[in-house]
Image: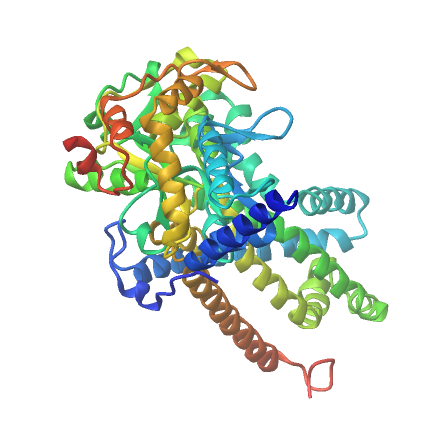
Length: 305
Length: 243
């Protein structure tokens, strides 16, 4: 009779296996289960969402969220061990790498909009940011209208350059718009006076200012080009089982107040590697989104809550 | 692969508000062609001058041209464009620097000149090789006829040398066209930049870059065909490529 517990265990195993079969894992979850590994895509310089610290290890707000998702996946699949692989992505490689299965989650600062949702899916929004401009205090630019006739830079292919182009046409500003290859170069153009202002997501502007040689020389405009737009962690489209796990994990994180704690860690305290402090308190919109997590791409949706 | 193909994306309106995505790519194509042509003219003119200098008997001329060629061909094009665009305005007097920075279309001028200079070093080397490949007797014959050095080059050496280097010059022209894509780093919104921004807006990466590839292929085929025709038209009967 001393084999009884063993038989019980065996039965339990059979039962569990049966349950697993009944649900039949598909897509990403199946893949993760088979390989025992999940791959996170990270950005190299998207401070403080996803960037490399001085040991070349990716860290950041979005990375922390992704690690919570990994824990949830591990629990969902009842795995003892889940290997986490890290893969760097850029704005040009994130889609192909996601589509061909190299990465399972993209942890960064990717804007969630309706057009992009035709190609991939996003989990619950982890940040809201509006498009503003940074300029040198010395150039005394207070509002968007002050940009009239000046040279303004933004990053090519960003939603920001689109908003700048629209504002330029709508307000008849005759701004000379230059498109930089990436954010770093765009900021460099303002630093070297190639352009008077750089239009970008305000949070990224804060991180550039904080990391610049003279943080006091720059100012971010009060006036915004857009309503706050959502950032989301990207996953493959048409994979409802995986999305459900990811959505569940992020919702639980935000609703328990742990999300707020993580937020404070990255936006209100000194962060590696240079000890910058972004000092960006949570916005009321994001606070209410944390209470009712959503993956809506519509900026108006966040206003209304 | 979990990818949502959408080849009709080219006919959808682009969010930049200037027409469809196809229009966006075509405007990039136009800028690519303009930049490439300007750069090629600069490369051909300067390259010819420097190439001739390299073959002159004068020590000074050959030193100057040697330094020029090595300076421009030993530095990556990307670095050169960066130097012209970001560093040059900082080292010239302040008022000049400011003028340079506020120049409209600065990325266009910088890249046309920068790529032109880079390619001119390569054209110079081709021309030097072309002149070097001519039998020594041609130069001597020119001198024996009482032609000055300039006349010898103009009427004897260069007409043949240019015919000889036509095929490698075609490759250099193609490189010039492809090198314009480096100008994306200084904010020139040419074909590659438009393809990149198309993929950022629509997330249709493969469609965007396939279209860009085909467009590059198309211009290069046109150039290759035109250069072939030119080569055939200029061929001297009984000499190298002539029949």
